[in-house]
Image 1 (cartoon, each protein chain N blue to C red):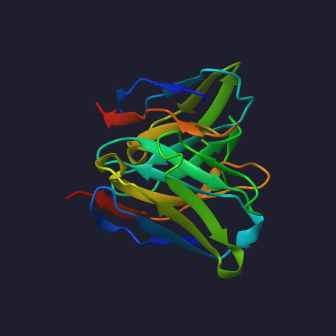
Image 2 (image 1 turned 60 degrees about the horizontal axis):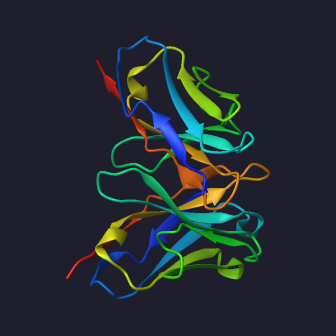
Length: 119
Length: 107
């Protein structure tokens, strides 16, 4: 079964850091680009960042550029999101999503991990 | 950055109705557009990719179309399971962007 499982969310104070993880199973992880998408409470979807299969290409939303870093470890079938200088605007449910091949629409999603930034 | 303008934000319809949701890109994205369905408390689910290709397992009452930078998702005959929120997304270039969403409600 193709599956993505996120972890690492929680309550964090403004200005602090948090690292999210996404463990993949059921498919050849290093064949696919991967992404993080977030959804603030009661709001729509926001693409956050993406990374190519070989980690050579990354992209970021303007709202997180310079604060968040995406990375992956293909040997561990894992995707990561390092989040620094967090603010209340980063409070959201963070989803890990798999891009397709050759079409890169997001065909598999995890169930999300919740991040709450509050003092 | 490419902006995606989705409309309407809310749509009230009845079972059996034909409904259409539209999405306009601020610049050319070729056909690199996807549609997702999201139900409360659940992750989004891919319905349509490359503007008009139906994802495996998605009912054929869902269809997508493109005219230039205007895209549409049509549900030919609404079923009770279709009442949800729908999002378009461009994946032509980074940063990828989503539309604001359309909540499809029961009339």
